[in-house]
Image (cartoon, rainbow, N blue to C red):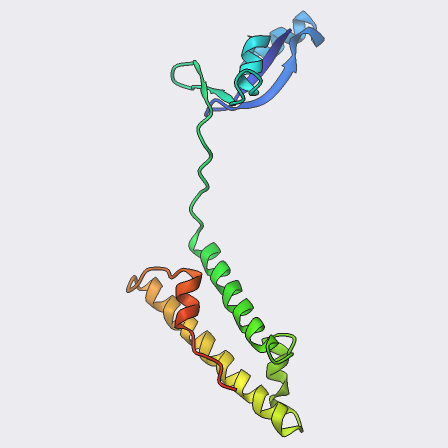
Length: 165
């Protein structure tokens, strides 16, 4: 069996057609559209059926080479900020859940409770929440001013104020 394969600029397959299912005219059209006619043994190599590894077509040499390992792109500053924000939010939520509040938001609503115990806890949560986010904004400003590196989640959480009930 033969295949018509179109490769992208990096040598990855972007489309594969079975040549035997096409007319001569269709094959000629595919070839005119930068498709290449390859034998079954090459196709099997490309898809990993020869040695369990997938291959690409080297755009420089034209040879079939083992696909390079995937390297995840570095997260953007925005993505890192979102991850750290989510970690801080989760940390605050879990902290107040130790006293059976749903999350930091609901805990803060108790600041106006008519029950003096709930009101005191709610006010403590409001003050703590504000201090936590103020610290986060201070760290963010230092990072943006290149006065410090972006902290890991663990480093960031270690710098946050502790809730004092």
